Length: 507
Picture 1 (cartoon, rainbow, N blue to C red):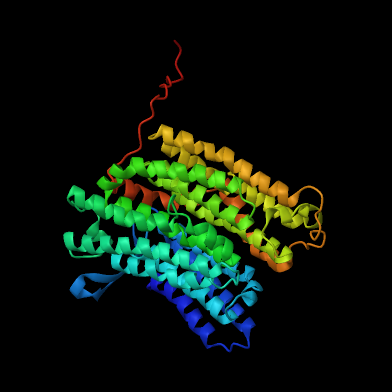
Picture 2 (picture 1 turned 90 degrees about the vertical axis):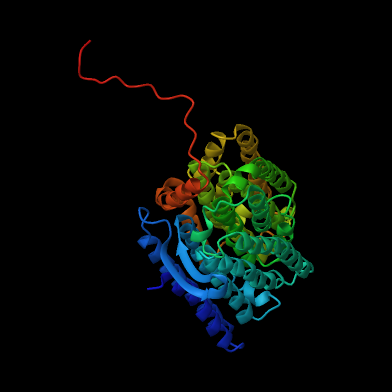
């Protein structure tokens, strides 16, 4: 059975069904979108359960010659890194559609058009994670811009069109650099786009470094990494909240996934050569994003800068070239999607109740909506990496893995933990505690639908905080393969454990 093709086709079928539904029946479109994404979730869980952590790196592989004249294949396969990102995608999509049940009626577009964009984008995201042909990956990498551009512009805010255009222009600029690198790699390489043919190439040093830059620029825009991040605050603040959850939770992960799969996997020497510069950019992103978040008065823009800081940590782990750092970075991609996604969903519930996203327009919410405030507190504590919650393990692994090789970078990045406690706790304090502000006293608590929406997010946040082992077991083989491609091993500890004398005899 072509598992990955079926997985990608299901959302396309759902999109076609939604397009055929009458515009006068928006509820049919809603249920069709939800049912489609639930089926994708079920199939993704089957794929994850059947993935053999002791088997070959790429599994569920498919390879059909597509355009033989140019060596282009329809080639699919997943390693452990792709599997966990597929799980993240599959969980977030039905959650966001259920969360947008009423929001989709308040956009510039019809309900069926809006939900059709959401469902079709799931196919594109799945394709980017499972592609093992570089041409196919690039085509899907660029295609994802189309539905997200229209989703961001759907919100109806005065600056929505500006934010959508800014997102598109930044992404297209990065994509053009990557296109040039893809073409150049084909010219100087083995005249193939298959990942298996491109890895372990012995390219001239100068060529490899220029090609690395082309790929890195495109992924740095998508991630986004400082200073190519400036489109993100506008896109998150001006777009619909459901779209922002998918943008920050999944779509931006394509950038950090690209760092790990393509920048390191195809150009190991160039990746090492550029590592000092990348580490500086990552540390700046961690600190700059955190400081900007502290100074924000807009809830959505605050969350955008929080993500800039977190993506800096993920990039740091990827370029640490240690198993702990890269496993932690991959786990952080998953955990960030759930913790930040939960925060954005709750902020969306608050905005729907008050009609404003200003932090100072709230206050005392915990007195009138205690369940909403309690879930918000849990998600905020996850965002600052409290031990026992999901992001702690991933952040700890990133910092430990980085410190064993780059002590100074890890030391500066650790300051981001202190700053995270400031922006998260201050945000909670100003919105949830204190006297009840005017217009807040009538804020209702979470409805049944909203509790169903947020329940799986909370469950994952707690479960991965206490037991991240199964996810790490899936991730480790992919990370080990990447380290083998870059010819890296974990540094040996400076202090070896003392030998223990055998017991049982008398001296």
